[in-house]
Image (cartoon, rainbow, N blue to C red; front, side, top):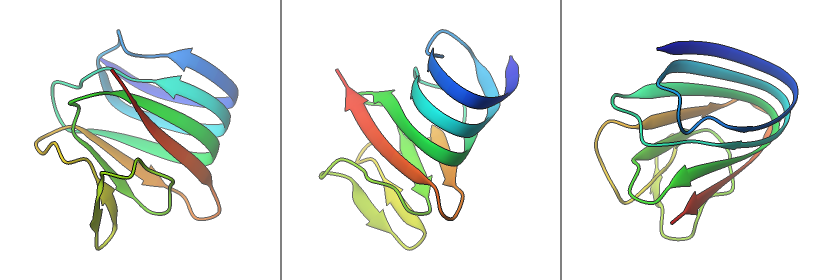
Length: 101
């Protein structure tokens, strides 16, 4: 299990890691897998986050998300429900969320 903090320019594929929490600061692009449990991602900066199709994702805060996502009082969620990624976007950050597959 990994509890990671990554800062600076980050270009990575974390899909093979089992994360308990991730903190991103800086800029870049990160690819994720399907988490076995609810997992927090805290984002500060300018990032593109790529998730596999079918993964449950909830974004808290401002982000650009795919058009079929559901607006929530605190942000956006994928149509797929259940435990998954919880992306917490810091104010002033620029985050784009994409889905692959």
